Length: 604
Image (cartoon, rainbow, N blue to C red; front, side):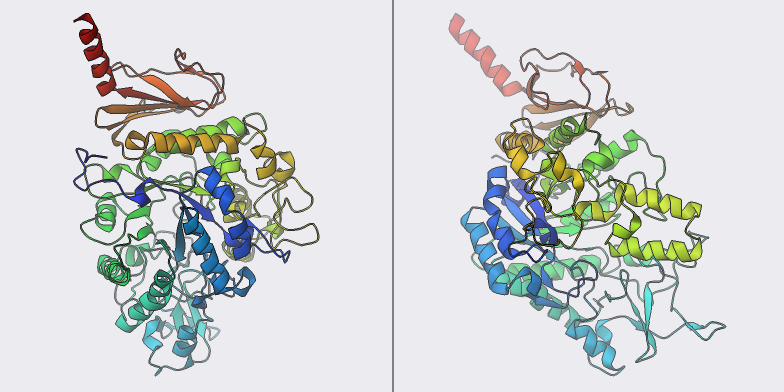
């Protein structure tokens, strides 16, 4: 593929063109009927992923852990959690993945570790321990009228409440932006950074991984002194730490240092993929993170589109938001790379997000399949590395009408306890919270994978096992691999076609640039163009349950090449979209020019 105008770097990279499938190991496939997914279960389903059209798998944390936050609290970076199997089991998955022509990406969780990690145990043991400064320790700001210690500052945990936990042994607080059992590592300490690189990165590079998804990668650099955050939420004593933690003063230095470690450690010119989870970074900062010339990371995840319709003060408070704002938010994923040597991602689901059909489309029995295919068309047409989360390819939807007691997520449980204590069980705050988790709880993504309609465990575990988490009852309604594999009109069958289409048209679908909205203010239509060389892709998608007229751009001769309605006439499609219909057209001026030349030649 030739270089393209607006992109200084030669574009083709395996990780840019890959479709990456995220596996949540606890919920993917249980091989031994203990109710938990495991490495052998993953190995048994690699052929399914290859047949789907997947190029790389990203496995969420599988390391040894107390599992207070589903493995994002790591006690040993160099050991697989025994419930998932052994290190050797993992090495076999890596080997088999490579044998099948796919890549293996692992999760890099190094803003924090588990309070059960030996590093923290040593740090906690005394104020004079050599590893004391590997974490953030502070004396109390004072004591309240009951003699209880007051946290050093007013930072709020992402999981609710104060971001500080008091340690009775040394009478100091430690910082933990997430759960109490997830103390933040102090990246200012060089010895700490070196240990992180060697244990969390080097060990797995030595065992053949092809890349890393960098968890909360914008939080490593805290502002020195850890000052009080500005008071924005006047109804709470705890305030967002983002001004002093996100994209901090040394963050680019840290990522360049880690990237250099990776490039130095890898042999034979192997190219390692790195993708950062980077919250709320402005475009200029995103370009710095992902510029090929700066050597920080290859691409990043942004969250404007997934935060759509939620309060910036509290994730589970739903607020009115327009379809236009969602379209603009989704475009923020990739438009910043135009004319640069940066790259980015395109996605709608992951382990921290609900099911996209429920969130952004229509999960009713009438339109679930059609709108699930529509979202596939949309993702297929957008630039960037494409990520698919397990079950998304089935058209999975949120579970329905679960009581809060059935939720497992530590974030939900912490916030529920806080709201119940501060406002009461029957308060408006609790009502808003329950409405919020019904739509956007992380648990919607974490139910066991539905391999069949077999009772009672949908093929995830054997019939005699009790899965670690409740199943989504949708497996009884045909949302499972077995039933959908037999149905040529299923969401699964359509995803296979969509991924094949994306590869066949990777020039304009994956690498296309100059993204431009058409009729942006339309609250039902998602329509845009993008270019690659002499090709222009035009997409029109109807995000409603009504027929919708649209206009094809007047410049050029556009051919309908892909869509989600089986009865669509490719040669003479109308300019009216059916409910939840999506179409992709391509105009190729080089083909048109060749046709003209052929006609001239024939006349001669």
